[in-house]
Amino acid sequence: MATVTLPNLRVFRRQQESISSEFVWDNSSSTLSSVLSENNTLSVSSTSVSNSQSDLSPALPSPTSSLPPPVDPSPMCPTGGKIGNLTLDFDDVKAGPLFNPAHDIWFSEGFLIAPPSSQTSQTYIPSSGGQLVEFVPPSLPSMGRSNVGDTAEIGVGPNAPNPCFRFDFQGASLGCAADGAEKWCEFELSAYRYNEILGTEESIAWSETRRIPACPSFPHGNCRLTSVSFDGYTNITSVLITLRVGTELRVWWGDDFKFGWSDNTCEAAACRAGVAPQSVKRETIESVARRGVWHWTARGLKRLDDEYIWESV
Image (cartoon, rainbow, N blue to C red; front, side, top):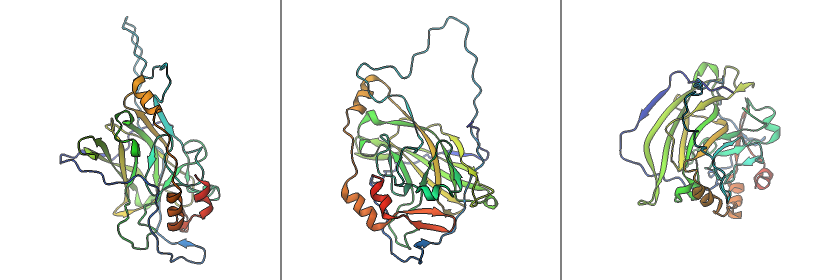
């Protein structure tokens, strides 16, 4: 899919003091009061987005002068290691909550892969393969409970203190629950980087709002994700995303998240490869099962069957 610059882009630098990130990398779903209808469905207003657009950059002609050959940005390291760029398409992820990590990338509460029965009637089409990721703001099904966060966070989780895990966020294909009459979905993004002195992540004063066109046929289907390229999200440990339609929080979808390691030396690659993989704790799974996981349907949010929670590990 080609990438073109979206209209009505608003980009701004935040000239302010750094703000510490208080997000916790776990997979706990927000606590819910079990007030459900007979079909276990919670009715909420929904809408979404589409009409693929993106950034097209004309290729420069190859120089004919006798310049030295370019340096390969992804050298072959004698000891191997994790190096180069990564695209997450979610096609090898089981249905259910997105337990961490997915190829070294950690996702906060609210991310899930819809079950197969829902995917066939899902309003958005994956930009590649057969699956996409869905983010349900935790407060939507929370029955008015407070202290739930609705900002999605994508990063390296507990590996943030390790400098070799800093990455660049390069792009994604996005869409949200908004119909054509609502015109736009506004994705607010901000970059964070781990501060070794403070011992926590803090804002690097780089933030922007991207307007994605709404899907005219939402929620009836055949909506296409919009391919978006990002600049400025370099050498970071996480990116925060909040989606609004007007002043309302809505469900949103994504596919083909593009990342690149900031340090591609063999030493950094060996550092990343040397970190032991982390598995999901049983307490986390039990907590998610107690609180429940919700996914979008055309008739409102529906609680996911608990079997998908256990089988997604």
